[in-house]
Length: 158
Image (cartoon, rainbow, N blue to C red):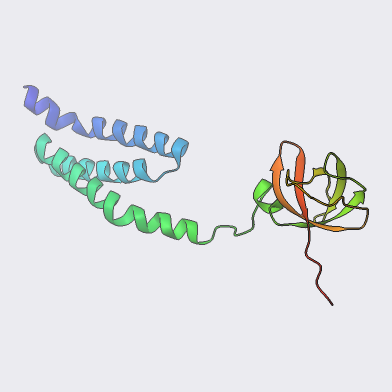
């Protein structure tokens, strides 16, 4: 009686497993649980054909492993291919040019960056750093809290 019960109602267990995997996939968006849920669909189909429960588990497991190692990496590469190459946040500020707004010798000053933002700035702690004056060109080398660490830009002849 128990074997017949499992065989007759295994499809309910497969539907519950598929639903759980889909919910987890929606929360994680890693494509791992998507592959497991598709593998579980294989188990559901095996159940509908009337195979024993252990064959259903083997089919689901084999399909899930195949999808995890063969399909998932290709899908992840395809999804990352169209990513936005533009830098953002602090990465976008590294190496950006700017102009000194107020004279300073390294302790405090203001610079207007090429992106239009005005930042409090200081020179790196290097002995012999020359004071910067309004209008001098600088380049951001680091961000420390809300302060941009800047160095004088190399002057090039135009």
